[in-house]
Length: 93
Image (cartoon, one colour):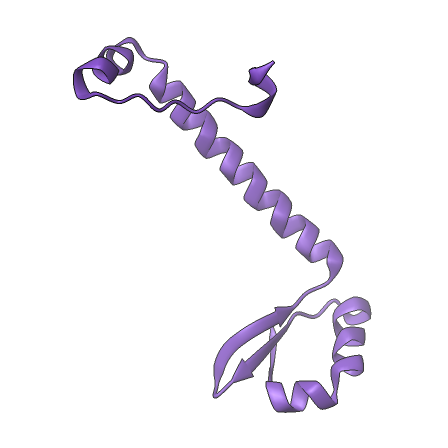
């Protein structure tokens, strides 16, 4: 659960909030008019979030790539006029 704080109060308590995030392991959500505006998370949390997002993206690309490699999909390209293909950067030589 994240600690919520209004933006006006967060301005005045920024150093304390940073300490809570870094040393206390908390996540802080800064709000404006009661609606979430930004979140303060530790660098380690951010790294985990970005890693999870990259893994999910790779899984989608892998799924789409395997779908596109079936024989019926290849035959459908010409039939439906599809010309775009995804190539991974490492496959481009």
